[in-house]
Image (tube, rainbow over all chains, first blue to last red; front, side, top):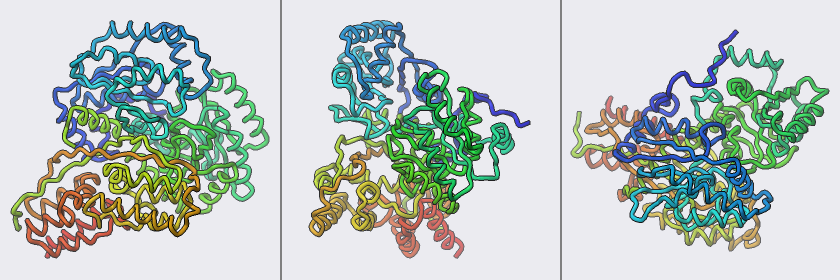
Length: 414
Length: 217
């Protein structure tokens, strides 16, 4: 039996570990940029040390900043349940979800900002505050302070609840710059806004190269036939990911082409709606042994990786999407991707160049049939998609973006 | 081996994207904003965009053409915008002028398409470029080839594609080969390598092939 890849990297990853992935020249360029920041220090602040995308990003980014020679400290704010309940409400309200304003929420938010400001020091040259939870720390920025303050917004604030947005704007206006994940996620502001795409780590268990043996055994474990085409959508069981639409598209494809469908996701047990969606998906798949519905536990990164690697086509037929990092993962694995033109997906899938953008069940089915019938075009899309990710959506690219931003803020000549 | 009068210093050019906060959804709006946006934005959606998509050889020329094709579904205008060869321009204002003229001409002929809503908006952004010297310097053609094998595609793009915007009427490599190494014929052959039908990796290989031929002669 093949050894299951470790869920955690066996050692602290250094920038040089990425040389086989992005090349020595790119690494050397980053080191050259970092040398120009010699003597400067950075602080990153967010609201949680584990769990969630931001902690995952910082967990890899901070050691790489250290490795490149820019001392970087990562601090996490504290707060009671009342604070995190308020910030969860703010988070949803910024996404445009209905939010019933309780005026004491703003007082609770302010009180914890003061408490955290008093507990922390801000001696560094660059302070990067992640997401709304710690945004009020900006009030620690004194007059004549040499520090450059940046707000890194990981969420879509293009259609926010106006009350919450205006409340946060009083803090946001005091920052020197803001970082956002897509031009469509933001709105006009009186400060400079820089584009940093979300990123994946090519050395993480979900993306690292796997042995053929492990991939084969994973397919065997889930009774998937490696000899027939495999269509895969990796997503939690959520209506916005439209798993039932994927099954309908698959059924249209099956009229013309033999193939199997894998719907792999997780987290359904923690989410009442997820349980219901999973049940509906299982019912829709019940009479077809070629539809594999896999509710995987959270530690399944290597299995997800294996399923993506073994797939003929990756599907992401979401009705709404954030950035869509499962698309990034599929593209990185050189797979042809058929995905809805929603959220951040069009930034990744350039229609007919790095994948196929679709707008309906019928369109999804048609593009899958087209790619199954034209494997050379599918291969070329996959190759282009891989290069597109390498150029834009790897953690190393984000490291470079931070170095560039710090150089610009400190007045480096452009 | 012939030594250069001046060494060639390879520069690393890295770019950050700044969001302008301007978006358009029709071709008429695109035209209006193209007249006003900063030169850094014109650069971002043409020169920089070609660098970011350096691995593509077909169907991609600049962001405006791509948006007109994919989001507005106007292939005839997209073709005309894509046909503008950025290496023909010594200033961004001249490039802006031709982009604007192409859109104006199209809308004069087909005014009914001016306000057709695109499937998704076009977001204007600006490129902010920082350059730092790399460890690579060439004093002769052999060292030039050695360095060329190692530099990143973005360094190649900086010297080969955007050079004209900084002064010389050719790319940096050809200018150095002609003036510092007095290899005018090689300079000319390199100048004629097509950036639109080659990936930047392909361009690198073509320059190396031409240079090697010269070294072996």
